[in-house]
Image (tube, rainbow, N blue to C red; front, side, top):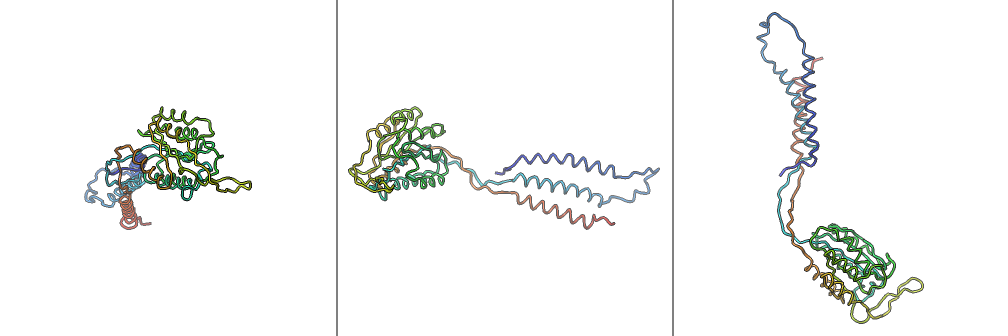
Length: 329
C-alpha cells in the first residue's frame, strides 16, 4: 500500500496553470509576424525538429517540478497489515515510599525489592497504559498514564526514600491513582497498591477511596509487604544517620483486605522476595483484557525513484541546452 506523508504539497501542482499560461503568452508575443501575398516559397521548409525540441524542454521542466513536488509529499510504501489479538489494560502502580520500606526483611530491603519486581512487571506488559504514584504522608504522581515502558521503568528505578515527608497516607495514594486512571478508555482499570504499614495520615480515608474506585469500576489489588514476626527497621539517629533495630511487623491487613473486597480486587501478603514476585505474576494473570489490534509492519520511504527521475530530467535539460539547443552568440 502506498501513501503520501505530506499530501498537502499536492496543491503545488496548481502552479502548472500560471506557468503554462506564461509560456504560451511569452511565445505568442515573441513570435514575429510578416504579411506576404503567398507562402508558396516557404512550403519546402518542412517541420523544424529544433522548434519542437525547444517546446519539449518546457514539458521536461514541468515534469521535473512535478517530481520535486512528489518528493516533498514524501511517498511511502507499506509491506503489510495484520490483525492480532492481544491483551491490554490500564494500571496504576501506587508505591509506598515511607522510611519503613527500608526494612531489611527483604533482600536488600523492601523498597529495592518492590522496585525491581514492579519494573519487571511493567516490562512484561507492552500493550498496557501504566501510571506510577508514590505516597508517604502525601501522594504524588510520578508518571502519568503512558505506554512508554522505558519511561516508567526509569522512573521506578529513580525513586528514592525521602522525597516525601514520612508517613503512610494509603487513602491519598488511592485517590491520586484514581485521578490518574479514571478517564482511561480501557475496559479494565486496576490499581496495584503496595504498602508495608497502616494508614496514619492523609486527607482521604482508605475505605472512602476504595468506594470511589468502585464507583469508577476500578479494581484495587493490595499487597502487604513484610515478613511475619519481627524485622530490622530503620530508625533515624540525632545526626541524621539510620540505625536498624528489630521491631514487630505491623500491617493493617484488615483494611487492605477490605479495600480489595470493596473494589473486586484481591489482597496479597508478600513475606519475602520470592513471594512478592509470585504476587505480581498472579496479578499479571488476572489483569488482562483481550482486544484486537491491527498491526502495521515495515514502513519505507519511496521517494528515491522520483529523485532519480528528477535527476534524469535535469540532465536531459542541461544536455540539450548546451548541445543541440545551444544559442550561438
